Image (cartoon, rainbow, N blue to C red):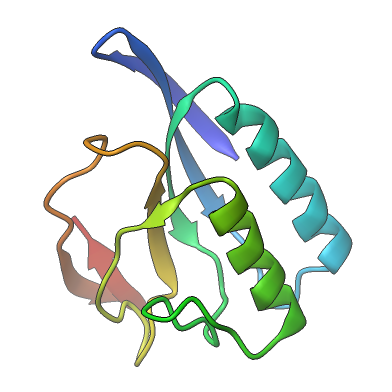
Length: 120
């Protein structure tokens, strides 16, 4: 996870960017989830990127594949809110934006196309 630390209202925050290949091993996912949990114990987090879980339904927090369900579990266990509400791929949000604290991100817009739609 790439990071850039800053301060907002005297609280430490981390901004992370992630690319998860579609065929990533479950073991690598588990390492990422563990690291994410450790970071979230002490920091506000804004995490964005292409996570390649096209079968996740964010409206109902459901998924078909086991790996996708594990990702949803990580998101829920770490109190992350997924902020992209419209497709960034052909029909689903592949490029996602998460925050673990209210007020860290506002006015998420999806626009332009470079393979996937761009978030602003």
